[in-house]
Structures are given as C-alpha cells and as structure tokens.
Image (cartoon, rainbow, N blue to C red):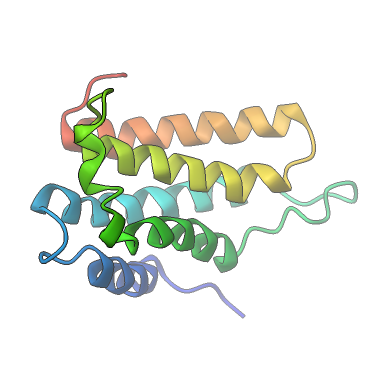
Length: 149
C-alpha cells in the first residue's frame, strides 16, 4: 500500500488537531501551531525513513504512517485535557514558558518517544536527534520568530 500524500496527511491531522485546538478552548497563537506541527512531523518522518533504512540487523526500521499517528496521538492526549488547562496555563508557571514553546517541547517529546524507542544504537539516535533539531529550527524558529533557545 502506498503511503498517503503530504496533502492527505495534512488534511487528516489538520482536522484532528483543528477539532482539539478549537477557538472556544484555545487562543489563536495555539491554534496556529497546528500547521507547523503537521509540517514538522511529516518532515521528521520522511527524513527518518530516508536516513535510517532497514538492514538485517535493523529489520524493524520501518517508519510508516503509524509513527505519525503515535506522535499526533500523544499531542492530542494532552490537548484534549483542556479541562485541566495544561497547555493554556503553562505561562502561569514559575518558569513562565509560552504555550507555543510548550507545544514545541511536547511535539519533540512525542517524536523522541515514537522514533528513538525503535533505534538500537547511539549513532542512529544521534542521527535522529540531528534531524529533530534541524527540523525544529527550520519549522518553528523562523516561522514563529523564536531565538535558538
């Protein structure tokens, strides 16, 4: 079965995240993160699939649409807990983190949890972390005018 196109993935997960990040529960700065999260996740997924190929010793290095579902599933699990206000109230914490930065951190955590758990050696984990760091800078820093921190 061929994987869906990037537009189809964007439509599918855009609808899911759109339902969770609705204007009744979240502010526009959180709602606009939806597009960036989708683009960044697809970029990481594609890069990992190209760089970390299966071998006889790493036969399980197959990265399919399930990985996307796992990343978005973790984000959705936190976002649907709006009654607890996890995402909205992060700016009230002692550390004063913006909800956008919290979502980026949550996204990175879910990507690491999903992809790194499959990897068998430190070299492959470093390759993944390089992909994740590059994608984070490309997709979030410039688009949202964040600095390197």
